[in-house]
Length: 605
Image (cartoon, rainbow, N blue to C red; front, side, top):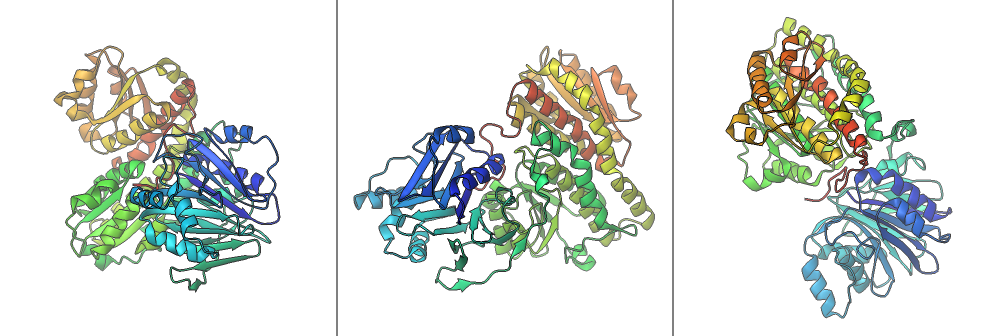
């Protein structure tokens, strides 16, 4: 969500901060600001985009130490005053903050009783005021006192006027890392912010406090005991976080899906077996699994629903799929032989991380599926499978979701094989089809020009229903979300058999229905559902498997995916829906990579 960047070094801080914040724009934000040590702390901040901040900076901001922030509003509407950085009343302290301080009201009342006056509606301003209240000359001592008083999730970067060559920072349940340079050091919410400057990082754990100077980095625990950490080296190609000539990152990432799938799938297939070297879950332990709980949010939740279908089919293990935001609060029944699978692209999703910790608290083994190496969820899990999607910059996930699907296929085959439910011959057939999934996705990219032309017809559509049965329904959920996220068209996904239980009353002349029909045993029923909506005036775009040409008799447009195993169709069916959502958004003049009100990494509950 919010993005944080900090710099201590010999270069001018402001350009580094602005460049870093630009790389974090994908996280979503509604205001931005920077603060630089310049004979005191000089702050510029504004509601709006980074371009608005740059426009507001009328003079060179000179100084070698600074912090920057892009805000996604939680407490107080987007405004210049509510933007970060926030200062103490006397201007001595400046703070950037990602997360939510849950007890900020009681702390605000306490500070007001001490005579402190507040100017913003935010929870962050209390941190600046509290830091100033406890400050007695030592930044680390003060930070320890502050975090003893606050409750919630936070990543903090703090400047103090009396320490013009230093930044102090801390994290708890919100991402923050330290970038290591030569005569310069950094903090940031995510690696892309700093890739141009360094490939060496410290990954901070909860409640680790870091004191940055240009020539040193010290990390302390809450008892002020210094901590030594290993350096995490990033080997990404910097161009992976660049557009490479595409108008938007989202289209680049749609096109990158086949290669990302190959990187995720192929290393795990060896001699017609699935080998998941990163996990220590043995065949004997798989046989003892009583139930699987898959926990995720958003698109990861949709991938998890596909996972439920595939795992139950191939491994015959009962699977429950939970929204992470609901998991803890429904008091789930967890037993010692259960397995919890946590799915998160960023590995930092707050609700999902909290669900992981709830499972661990009950002694349940946790296996995570994440994209970001070294993320909190990856570090706290018993086992981890990385999706190897590479950096994903657009807020609306594409290749992140696709690779999560592929890991679900791999896990289902791994579990089924471990339980001896899949013969060697059947495994060869499954693997043959799985290895072709990237090619199937690549073939579907060929419909781009046709889809681009088609969206001109539907750019002003007000309501879209996406329907399917079985795995097609799970795929429909993600296709519908893509449309909502980036084009702002009202879209809903329904299990096609549920239309007659109320929803069909919303279908009228001109309503657009996207129908997914890849499951052979459900094909005729889905065709009947198409006829039902056509009878009420709907236009229908269908997605079906090659060889199902009879669907052309009832649908207005049909896109075909290559024949494959029905368990793997969700990977290919999604591509036309991604392209449809993308070009509809372009037609409507939307900011495809940075949809309004959305954030890439949701680090608040």
